[in-house]
Every structure is written in structure tokens, then in C-alpha cells.
Image 1 (cartoon, rainbow, N blue to C red):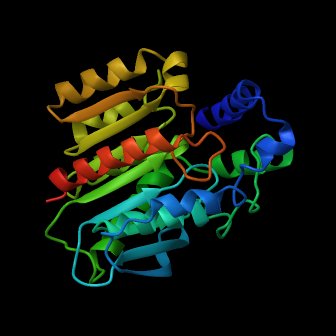
Image 2 (cartoon, rainbow, N blue to C red):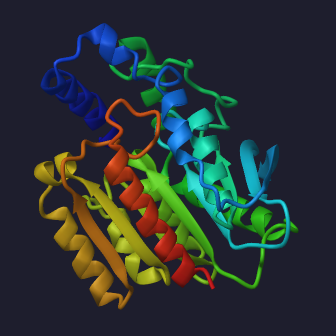
Amino acid sequence: MCDLLTLEDTIEYQLRSGLSRREFGALTLGAGLTSMLAPMARGDELAVTESDVDIRTPDGTADAYFVHPSKGAHPAVLVWPDIFGLRPAFRQMGKRLAGAGYAVLVVNPYYRRQHAPVAPEHADFDDPATRTALMDLRNSLTPATTQTDALAFVPWLEGQPAVDRRKRMGTTGYCMTGPFTLRTAAALPERIGAGASFHGGGLVTDQPDSPHLLIPKMKARYLIAIAESDDKREPAAKDVLREAFANAKLPAEIEVYAGTIHGWCPIDAKVYNHDQAERAWSRMLVLFKSALV
């Protein structure tokens, strides 16, 4: 499972970097976040409006973070966070994306069980108690819950004045939620025009419900940014994905990002790789500009 890979790779990174466990822990949620946020500011970003929102679904009320340019209507993007869920890092990433001209909804996928945040501020996945709690939450999610949520979140977005309903939507996912983007795009092919998976786990499996088998149902262009460590474990996955997108005649940029460890894109990750994360972010913006029309 992709989130167990997070544990394996962060331990490997710790050993390779020569950091002590205490020093390494200082890079967890919150502690290293302040230093990472400053470089993300851009002088050309739009002013944005942000709010916490509640969204009714067939299974309850989902809490989420909605942020959008303060003026006008813009293409929408649905963001599925990684196993740590909705938290300050993903709020900041959503805010940055909104500043680039998008109406962004970052959701708490665990709302059926717990309101965000679902992990302590300095959560560490190699702590057994934290890992057990997060894996229990993660295991409560299924392909069916993802589809239920996508069919609730996308219409909610369409009803917001800040969203330009004439334009198609995007969706992004990280680690465990990379597959969520494929399921969203397949469930709503007429609305989802672009998807981006960052170090997504389980995009290709040998099961009949493997996410890659949904590609023929989609109409979305794609960015699939693969961690080098993930590619070493499953070198054939990228080729299966490339073939599936080619057969569906859907443009897809599928790349292994050199030197990256599983989980390298969120700005609060222990294995955050600034240069490669920025490159993946820029490729996402290129994709959205061309596809969300």
C-alpha cells in the first residue's frame, strides 16, 4: 500500500541523510512548514478569498477548505490530500493554486469518521500509534466512497459563483489519492478535463478494480508525476499507464522525477524535494491552462 511506502522511504531517507531521529522529526508537520512557505509566495498571484465549508453528501457532511480569486469566476480544481488529510500544508497549496487563477476545494476525505485535522500537528508516520490511526482511517475509504464524494463535490463546486461552469474542472491527488483522481475523472468525464497524480500509489494493480482500467471512461488530460523510489519498486507501472492513455487517445505526461522519494510533493513532507516539487507544480499549471477550457 502506498502509505506504507511513505514509512519505508522516509526511514531510508533518514539513513541516507545522516540525520538523527530527533533532527529528522523536526522536519515533520508544522516544524519545517514555516521555512517552506516563504518561497511559495509569488508577486503575480491574485488576491484570494478563503473559507471553511461544509458539503452535504449521501453519507454525511464533509468539511473542506474553499479558496478562490476574490474577483470573477474561474475553473475549479478538486484537491484530494494524502493520508495525513486536510491540514495547513494543503491549505497553503490550495491557496497558492487559487492565486494562479483557480477556484480550489481541498477536502477532508475522512469526514465520515472524523473532522479535520485527523493527525497531530507534528504527526510522524513512523510512530506506531499515529500510523495505526491513519491506516484505520485510510482503510475506511473505498472506490465506492470516492465516487460518492466526487458526485457530491463537483456539483457543489458548480454551484459556487466563483466557479466558471462553462469551463471543465481539474482534480489532483497525492499518494493514496492519486487513484482518486482517476475515479473522479471516470465518474464525471464530461466535467473533469484534467487530472494530476503526484507520487500516486496503486494506480496500476492486478485487481479487476485497478484504477488504470478506468482510463477508457475518461476524457481528461493527465499529469502523472512518479517518485523514483516508486518506479524502482514497480518499473512496469508507467508503461501500463502510457499504453492505457495512448489507447484511449488521451494526452498524458507520465514521468519519473529523478532523485525523489515517495511523498515528495507536499510542502510539509519529510522527504519534500523543493526543486522537483516546483517542476511538477509548473507542469500541473501548464496542463490546467490548456485543458480547463
